[in-house]
Length: 77
Image 1 (cartoon, rainbow, N blue to C red):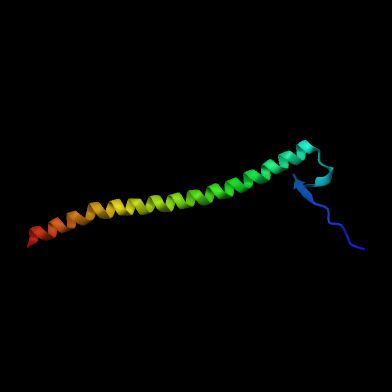
Image 2: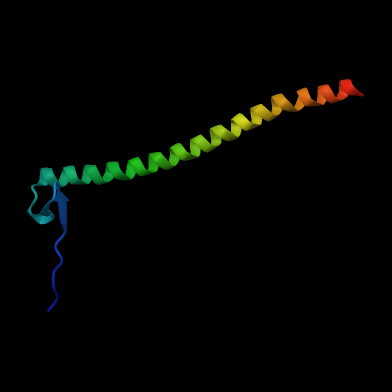
């Protein structure tokens, strides 16, 4: 004998058996799961973009500061 594990969801502290949901409710649940995945992926991409942006800011900053420092050093010679 094997014990069947029923898939459930909890909404507002009430547990529901997924098999008892209507097709529309199951579809809404699928949308929620897909949106959660998209939110996670979008946050990951945002993190990548923010790091890239900071890197390009540093590249710009270093390119602006570098020649100025060299010019001052050259004028002191």
